[in-house]
Amino acid sequence: MAKIEELRRVMRDQDLKAIVLTDPVNVSYVSDFSGDESALLVTLTQAYLVTDSRFIEVAKHEIHAATVVEHHHGLLPAVGKLADQDDVKELGFEAEYMTFADYQVLAGATAAQLRGTRHLVAGLREVKSPAEVALIQKAVDIAEDGYRHVLATIRPGMTERAVANDLDFYMRGLGASGVSFDTIVASGYRSALPHGFADDKAIEAGDVVTLDWGCTYHGYMSDLTRTFAIGTPDPQLDKIYRLVYQANRGVAAMMRPGVLGKDIQAQAHQPIDAAGYQQNFGHGAGHGIGRDIHEGPGAWGVYMETPIVAGNVLTDEPGIYLPGIGGVRIEDDLLVTDSGVQQLSTPAPAELLHLDI
Image: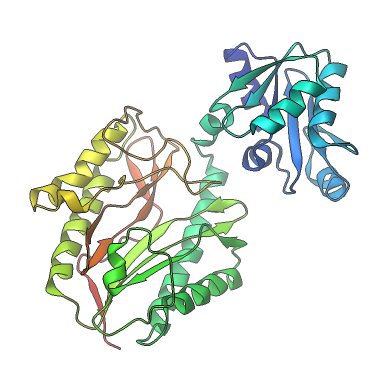
């Protein structure tokens, strides 16, 4: 009930008397429904979770703050019928998620005037409750256990894909329901690809390996990156690792309520740019995580004026990438508190780890 009331508060602020949620993550966030093929119609006094016969019993078990309605002739036509039954004059919809085809179906199913909305539920999701933070922390803990498993089992000759598959399976064995995204294992020259998803390249002695991974636990995600070496790498990679570590720690140290995203980005760049690698760090230095792997308050950038607030859970992920040689990225998950920041992940070592295998 609490999240529906939070949504109604935002609706009142925007003079909106009814809205239909169709993004599955937002439906789940507001209603606690875990199934697919659903929509949530919320008015200032009523709420309806609409789904089909495959999920009706699940919905009846999980939903306590909304009336469960089974549709037989289409999800959005059922929503339109309910809106008309409740004499809804203006119906909000999630403009960033609804396709034009679905918009046409909904418009033809109700007499209500449709009004596109943006960021209503996403804005609520930016500030995590203690219960949500605990689930993210568990996802982080599982991911870190998975990383320790990788360090204990990786060997020259293994393919990147084999390492990724083994890590994914191991995290499921620890209670993860899945991975947050396709696990990135990028070794040797491929570590210079910021998002070099695992392929069939064999890992070799002297390679650095960038591992970007995370898992989902009860709907909440972790997102971590570590870079390590198999044996002795190119000395340039030891050098840039120290710079990336310095940038990572600088970002964590400045996190507090009120800091602007653009200032976080500038802090991440400071040691990297000063050493002459400004052209080798082109992505944002972090983003929000939660039920999605990228969510508000957004990815840091030079134009981001949004201040962070207590309850945000954010990544801290500077990197340097040298084409043809290799790259380094370090990524941690951080909780913004009233007085500063709480590190959810264990900080990376200050020096590039060389595995003697």
